[in-house]
Picture 1 (tube, chains in turn yellow, cyan, orange):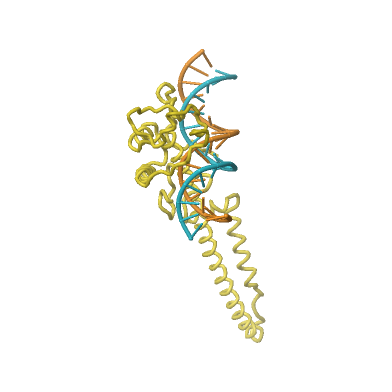
Picture 2 (cartoon, rainbow, N blue to C red):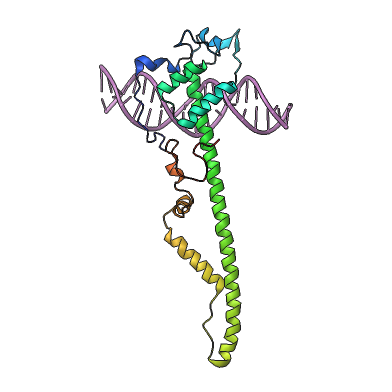
Length: 216
DNA sequence: CCTCTAACCTATTCACTTG
DNA sequence: CAAGTGAATAGGTTAGAGG
């Protein structure tokens, strides 16, 4: 799987960014940080301890979530500048911002897969119904033909026998043959329902589909 | 070419919330 | 209190920089 997307690769700057993954280094001494104990302990990436017990997880406030969400809608990836800006604005560790974005991308991808499943299922149902109708139509025509054959035999000796079901099945086979080598998703994409495949999944350049660009 | 670093990912854990 | 949700962690991959 390719998860490096189409955006420019990040160019790390160790001198200025090395503290991003350090829970205990507050880059903004003046900024009030939600988890005060982060500054008091020396636990690194290990969950902070307070009085010998694990620090309680805190949910982000609705205001923090609103701002993070808005930022995510603009861009699902988090560049260092935006991370620092959000960190300042929300009073959260940059690491927390990064984790939130990562988890949010995961939720987004899950939703996209759900939508993709729904789209494919809908497409299947439509095609299935269409096939059913065609089969019924062929059976009617076949009955009609048999009737006429009765007359024909009496007059000219009749028409060659045609199986309606076989005709539909063989037509379906023919269609399947033209899609040889293509995945089901690619076939659906060919039919204009959705213009991307799972392999093409890209969290940045959102493919055109029937759902919104950044669903939740 | 190898190592280091920092980004990303998926899978999982665990604390908190909710019905 | 079990199930659901979301924050956090673990461990892996990738790419760029530098020796």
